[in-house]
Length: 466
Ligand SMILES: [Zn+2]
Image 1 (cartoon, rainbow, N blue to C red):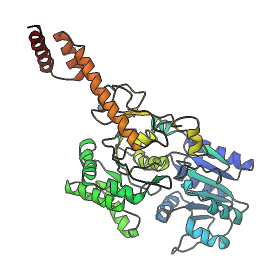
Image 2 (image 1 turned 180 degrees about the vertical axis):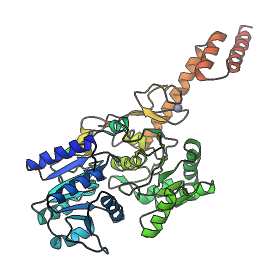
Image 3 (image 1 turned 30 degrees about the vertical axis):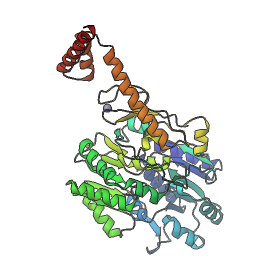
Image 4 (image 1 turned 90 degrees about the vertical axis):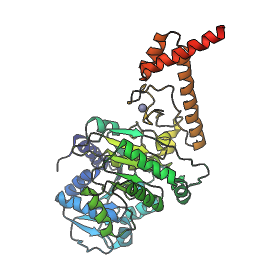
C-alpha cells in the first residue's frame, strides 16, 4: 500500500507520540485526504507484528463499505456487528461501536484501536473501551476535531497530529478546486436552536417551501447543468421534495436515507454510479463516511451552525476523479456566511471552538464577499469576482458565533445599497460622452447605453439652463 508523503509523515508522528507513552492520539486530515488508507496501513502493520487491532465505525451503514476497502487492501478481518458472522481469530476486527460496547468483555483485547470519524467519540464510551483494554493505544481519525456543539475532544485524546490544510491538498491536486455560489439566504428568523444547531423539525419546516426547493433546481440547471451530484436537505420530507422537484424538471433524481433497507440504498447508489441518476438528495447519509461515487455538484439546502457538519458536507464534493476539473457548490443555506469557504485556513486544537474563537472574533479569520451579479462567494481579499465584476465593498464582516441571521440579512442589504450608491457615484462623475463610454466599457454595456445616458443628461442640462 503506497502512502502519500504527508500520510507517512503523520503516521511517523503518531508512532513517535505512542513510543513516548501517549496512548490516545488524534489524526486530523481533511475529507478526501485518505484517512482510510492510513488506517489500513496501521492495522496491517499491527497484524504483521502479530498484534490485534480494531477499527471502529459509528454507523452500521459504514461497515460493509469499509470491509470492501480493507479487502481490496488485502487486510483480512473479522466483523463485530450485530447480525454478521464473527471471525474472532482474525487479528484485525472491524466493529460497529454499538455492538462493540455490548460485547467489550468477550472480545479479545486489541493492542491498537482506530476510531473513524472520532468527533463522535462519546467520553463515556471511550472511557469504557480504555478501562476494558488498559494496554491498548487509541488512534482517532477525523477532518473536524470538534463535536456538533463546538466542544473539543481533549477529554478523549491526549495529542493531535494535524495534517495538511484543504488549500494545500487542493494545490497539490489531492482535492478538487471548486466554485462556490450562494444564490439564496433562507429566512431562519424564529427557528430555535437545539444542542448547538438548529432544531431539526423547525428547520425542516422553514426550508421545505416550494420557492426554496425550486431555487435549488433552478440554480443547478444554471450553474451545474447535467453534472452528477448530491443535495443535503434539512429533513427527509424536504429531501423527497427536492428529488421530486428535480424529476419534475426532467433531471433524474432520487431521495436516499439511512432508514432504507441495505438493498434499496445499494440500488439507488448503483443507479447513480451507472449514470442513470444525476442527483441524489439526502439529509445526513452522505455527510460523512458513506462513500458517494464521483460527483461534481453539491447543493447545500440545510443551514447548520456546526462547522464540522458544514465541512463534512462540502468535503464530499472536493474528492478528485478523472475528468473533473472543479466542483460546483451551491449553498442555499447561507452556510458560507456563517463558516467561511471550505478551504479557509482553520486552526484546529483539542480544545474545540471555544479556543478557536477565543483569539478574537470569528477565530478562523475568514471573511467572505459575494458577487451581486453572479452570487459567487470569494475570499474577502479578492478584489474581482471570477465572473469579472469588481466587488464594490467588503460585503460582510465575519459573523460572530452569537450573531444571528438578522444581522446577516442586514449586512447583505447594506452591501447591496452600498453597491448601488457606488454605481450612482460613478455615473455622477461622468461629464463628457467619452466618460460615459469609458464607464460602458468598464461595465460591459453596449456603446448605445453611453450615448443614451449622455444625451439624456444634455437635454436635462439644457432644460435647467433655459
Ligand atoms: Zn460574479
